[in-house]
Length: 429
Image (cartoon, rainbow, N blue to C red; front, side, top):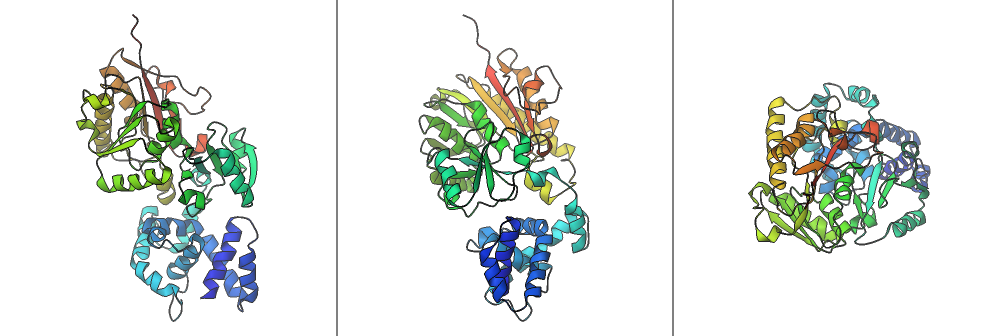
């Protein structure tokens, strides 16, 4: 029905804080303007709830031609509005296919947030959470394009380029169709929170990588020069691998390992789209990789981003506000694997530099793991002092832990993250 398309067009204008000409044309030709206005207002009011349900149900992945704002309007009408009894037009069969999953995800969201009514979801979601204010970071894929060309492209699309940010306050102030260059990473653009670029042609073509700033730091801090041999020990889904390839300029070799065949298949697609040609994928447990294998005799750089609790992930914080910390049993299991993986990585004979990172906030997966690995290799490696101006440092649980980096929505306007850079201690001749 035309009302849904009209509401989606108006909603797009409202959420981007720009006038929506298409929406106004629709609205002026729509007979029941009050009904249209009410539909837009209610959809906007439940916007965060609808985003969470749509993401959990995988609606936009399943229906690739469905635009995000139209999906939001349709799902509001299905779950929170009048439903599609006796109407819905061509959209009704599409929603019927996903109705059970969408309703189940709404029910799960209520359980996670401890509420029983739809209205109560608004009260929980209205509490200020810094995670909802984290901007959209976009890494320019230098294997395919240049930052200058991407900036020009967005300017031609009507975006306003504000230059390089000088502080976090510049980033916090971003609104509408304005964007900035990150003050630390020269290939990272910053857009306002909730900016959706999944359908953007540059993203679809692999020229842009949608990647949080904290997630970009491991490859930058590993800093392998072109021609190096690098191991990405737990590589899927592949954003960091593509970043390593960009830093290498596709010169050298990346050995990327992961145990999950499906994730590796998706990763292969991502790397192909990004133009990566220097990576060798292997469906293999990194712990089973022999450091003495001649294939890895030149590996001087290792990026280790192992499985973790994900307690710092933005999607988890937004979909499960107030979610408790991982159980001690789970943390022990994860930390045990992480310690084995890090200790194993430090045994590669030519290794000079290693980055250990997680998207966890838990000390057990971060500082404790690094401390245990250093104690197992006394005098061989040390924590490298990196980014001295970074505002959020490691917990002071052992001498040198201040060289580790932490990140969070509150302190760095990023997802929750932990990074440690270990470098081999040169033995005097």
